[in-house]
Amino acid sequence: MLKRFIGYYRPYKNMFILDMLASLFISLIGLVYPMVTNRMLNDLIPNKKYSGIIIGGILVLVLYFIRMLLRYFVQYYGHMIGTNMQANMRRDMFKHLETLPFTYFDNHETGRILSRMTNDLFDVAELAHHGPENLIVSSLTLIGSFIYLLSINVYLTFIIFACVPILVGVSSYYRKRMHAAFKERRTTTAGINASVESSITGIRVTKAFTNNDTELKKFEENNKLFVEASRKSYNAMGQYHSISSFITDVFNVIIIIAGGLFLYAGDISFGDYTTFIVSVNVFINPVTQLIGFMEQFQNGVSGFERFIEILDEKPEKENDGATDIENVEGEISFKDVSFAYEVNEEKIVLNHINLEVKKGQKLALVGHSGGGKTTICHLIPNFYRVSSGEVLLDGKNVNDITFTSLRKNIGIVQQDVFLFNGTIKENILYGRPDATDEEVIKAAKLSNIYDYVMTLPNGFDSQIGERGVKLSGGQKQRLSIARVFLKDPKVLILDEATSALDNTTEILIQDALDELCKGRTTIVVAHRLSTIKNADEIAVIDKGEVVEKGTHDQLMKNGKIYKELYNLQFRKNQAI
Image 1 (cartoon, rainbow, N blue to C red):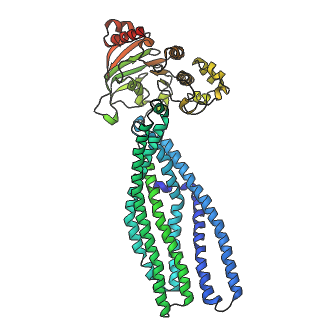
Image 2 (spheres, rainbow, N blue to C red; image 1 turned 120 degrees about the vertical axis):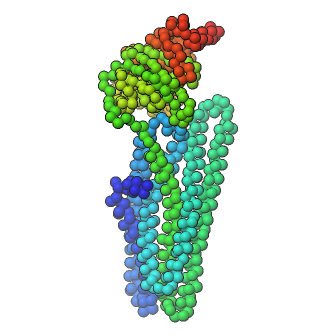
Image 3 (cartoon, helix red, strand yellow; image 1 turned 180 degrees about the vertical axis):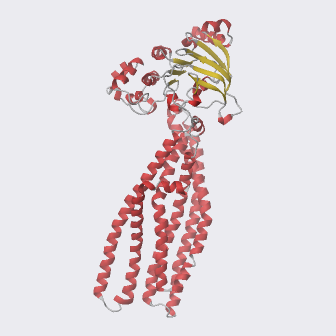
């Protein structure tokens, strides 16, 4: 893990070296003051060398001015190193998240992922900047001050230094407790983020059902876990700091007692004794910095571990030797396909599915909810790997086709439309980012949304809000159809694309969908059976199996489940 962390310093190694040198000079300048004090007390003042006193004071002032400039350099450029490293880690995390399979996002909440990308990486950046500075520079200052104290009085120095092993022992003991406590605290923070993200995203549902108290209760549960985890971490931190501070306070007590006895016995001069009192703070400061470093170290390491956990997640992997598919015709075959989600492998979702869709034909999938229709659709673009059997596109196993090549030839329109926060144009361009304005306009016209866009003050540059909140359900659906028109795929999947719309809007959308289906192999998942009467073939999916297949007329004549579903809908429509 250390090697991976150090790797993020590589692009900034020159600036990092300058930062460390500046920090080192800051520490060395800190040693000048006790040296000048010693010279004044033992030579300049007793011998009345007033010019030397003035020169010594001016020298210290000049060095302090230089130290001010060096501190600015360390604070600004040092933090920029940490910030740039944080940005690189965030980029690597985001890039890796984009490669992870659907199963990862099925099992991990968005808020928890965001917490790792923001809070955790901020602490990692702080460690990246201050960690080496505190560890390396404080250690060198500690050694330098120790040598200087030895030059004043060897015995008194060793008496002080004898306290250091005690301090190290305390640090080692409480370090493990702090590490576990801060890791638990991060987990609960992620829980709060997940709860807030879920509640804010669903705020309209919350208000519609007047369930504010329910959401508050769920938030409070996570909030209490956070408070308890924080209590444990701050308790460990409090014990660590209080005991460590007590040990450093003992340093001063020892100086007063031991130094006074040495002065009384004539083993040290008054000037050296006074200098020792001043100099011991130069020795104690790096010790306390190292103590503070332990807390920062725990925060940073915990954050980096959680960052590494995501990077170590196995990405969506193509088969060795997978190749691009050229000149796609759009013929799809399911040959004895069975499938179970990883989270619940003992529950078979699809069981020995066999389906065939010729080039340009339309296959409709119908059946009760939870039967496996959407899962069949997800297997075509290889969002999930089949447990057994094979899915073929133009006779080629989808596992042997590169993801990019496969998915760029497949367009999907779903019931739950996801639009990105941005403009209408940006969302249409998502279908093909390099498309021209003319192609965007054509796609908008084909999807029957162009006239609406033209009524807006900013036209295609109009903002649609988060997830298209400023648009109606029909407008969002037509926008999603427009980006599929722009993509111009050979295979089209319509997963209950109109089931959430009212009848009037559905008719308008259906016209756009009929236009979209022309010349493409189409898989339609539909609950409204009246919309798929003209499909080339209808497959009834029940409990993960194909139980009936045929045209509408064939199934009405010989089918059982399809006929029941159709007649039930017809009776409902008549009643309405």
